[in-house]
Picture 1 (spheres, rainbow, N blue to C red):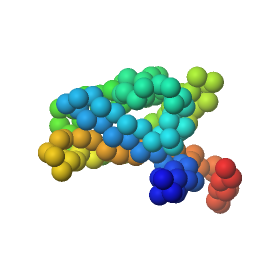
Picture 2 (spheres, rainbow, N blue to C red):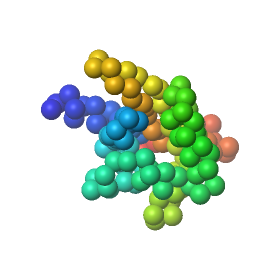
Picture 3 (cartoon, helix red, strand yellow):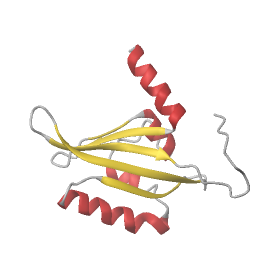
Picture 4 (cartoon, rainbow, N blue to C red):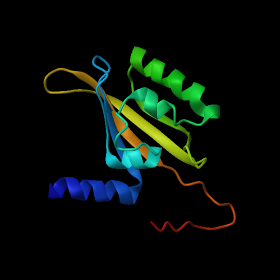
Length: 130
């Protein structure tokens, strides 16, 4: 319990959520921080279409294409894009993933969702205050 709490605090501080997806079964898991970044409420069942609905319309085709490619040839990688939340807020993100085989031989994809900072060209550095 304490270890999970520490992990959740670390993810929130880093603005880095985690996810897991099993292609054979569709089983999907999202961390609390993944949900927070994507603006997905706890009562929304984790599944890929719910996340893809949050992708900015201008980026959605790219994300959907990469998703289909990952299902056909799961190699992992990174993809930068934007989320469009229901309140109109746009969040820049980086989605990273890699294929993995569990100890019982099940294939799955695991990765992270990171909220990216957009650099301000008028400053030398950024300060993030939660």
